[in-house]
Length: 190
Image (cartoon, rainbow, N blue to C red; front, side):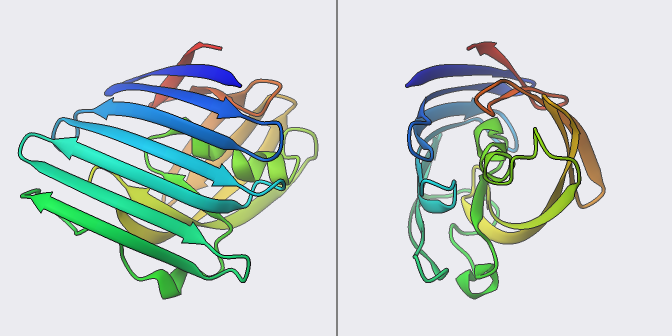
């Protein structure tokens, strides 16, 4: 079990992560955009780092959202949601039918979820570029969308992340944890 703290450009995140058989993690994050929020999550993957479960709770002044996102062994995604109060923007959840080619969730603004595809495909060791579809969970709304991304091996500790006109060269440690995500976060406690 590792305790991880990322200092973010617009907040912070703490996670307790276990890499002994896949990835199991619980975490909390605070952010400011588009409104101040507090977010708690729990993540579980299979031994080969394929998402099984992501539960997320987001809270702010006068509102709360909850998401229970699951990927079955048959590749079918499902979710349950809850809403309280007023938060401008999309409702939690989304069209799960469009996610059936996704193996991973991506909790927006969390460096932790950039770990799964990199570890599953050995992208810190093998050269090449790989494309993925993610079940992207937008925060703080917890709206889920189909999101294409690619990861390109740059070296033994770095991978280029690209999606929709955005790219960043991510630095990883020996466990496959993001230590530097330019423009988003830097690992403060390892």
